[in-house]
Length: 231
Image: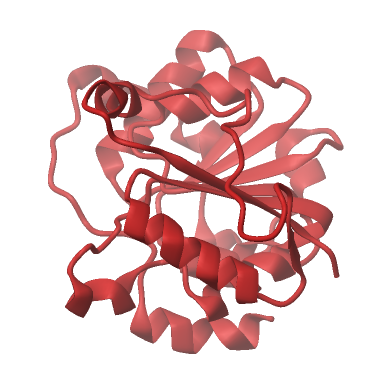
């Protein structure tokens, strides 16, 4: 379904560039570990067995931020392999620091736009789960068209999932949750794990972030959507 990617790329990106400095530890981890943990779009289509040295379920996370949640998930599910995509260099450095510190071998990362990575690097029907947690909600009405979760994009994601694979979305903005539910409920080839128009409880595998805990103390909600690929 790569034919669908080019027009999406012109309309929307998977990220918003943020400024920020790398700490010395993040920079060292980046420099030391990039050869082993870093993936390049120019390398082309992935062979996951060759990349990880084994056959295992592969989970892709788009926009992992500073990497704490992804590193925790990878450490708690050593039977899975994880690929993170993030454009924020300090976040990539932080993830590499956490992976190195924990001695994990089941994590790799792209420092790139996920739309491009999906188009050029991720084989169709290859992923067991795709997770997108707390993407920019673009809460102003005039900016809604910039939201990542749109009909054409979730079909690109579906093409990368195996049958039975899961697309897991989470947001702390109710209006974006409602938008996501509408998009996913209308999307061909998906089935809502929780039932028609229902949000899912947070799965045990998704850690609660510090940001999320702070939001809960302030009375903010969090909405998880889990949809399986049916065809």
